Length: 123
Image 1 (cartoon, rainbow, N blue to C red):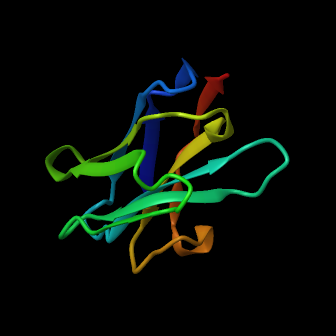
Image 2 (image 1 turned 30 degrees about the vertical axis):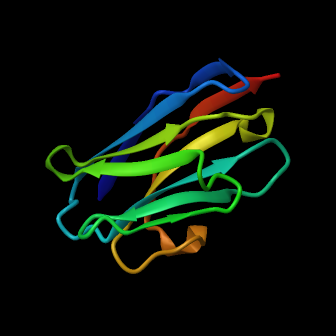
């Protein structure tokens, strides 16, 4: 089992920044990658970004490329999502996800999920 705890969400004005954190605990020794997804009201869960734990290869959704940065601290088993130039359409619950094997942008490729943290961007 792997437990994921997100933090850092909140309310911010358009153009502002937030940094999300996701701390992993439990049987994390076989981690391939961690990622961030988001889900807004009435919509399906949407891929945001992913980073591999070995090598640090990153992958972003087109909608956030150039504005969001995913990073990791392997010693702390923590992944971060730095979000800059936020827009009202970024408003959503953001979920951290953990993958044992190869993973990309599909939710089904991830094995464990956090509870989510709300991000609200006001116009």
